[in-house]
Image (cartoon, rainbow, N blue to C red; front, side):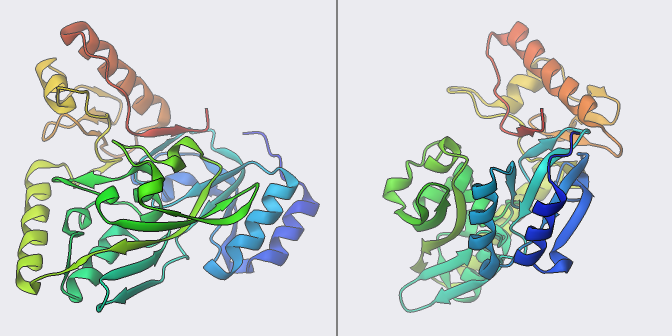
Length: 307
């Protein structure tokens, strides 16, 4: 990894965020659900009150910046990341308006935390997200979804930072949500700061029961005991990625500690000490084998960072 941050730039960053929010050469494997990744040159965990001035400075200086949520859809190289990684983990406030059904949350709040806040207020519509291991920012970015629910069904508005125009707000209808797609995935320089979710009043016991049912399904069908990025591949139109991989005889296939799960073939898991090279080789082999077996080309859902 080539270091690109100057001492003067680092000193200015120290003026913009608290000292306990700054980490140098921080291992990214500590911050991704795949538990893979080399060091970030500068790793920051700013609070909401600091983020705008920080982004203004990083943009002004042209500093290479990567925004990190919960790290649940990432595969980071072992060489790590030059520049600055901005984690949204400390941007974690949630406000529930029980009267209007609007939940307002910062980008770094976990989807599970929002789902529980909605449940406690007897607001329905977000149960699908309770077990998705991502943050609100990441969920909006990729239009996360499960069990028939998607972020596009509940997002009322999104507040974001545009390097050219500063802080902007877009409605859910204007966010161009599609399958694992949004205006934010099309414009990765945009930084999601917060979002409003429009939910509906529901029955508390029914909400609890649905959340528990969906969680039980995840536990039964997914290899939650191992590090992974969730579903490794996007769903090909007319097919299911997991079935294609299973039909190709790849369940249990491994490269080092990177393995196609024997519980759900759609998951490539880290059984302990998998490296980036291991996981990348496994993903490439799955794509090649499925293509040869069925003629279908799988596309990774996991984003590869650092190449």
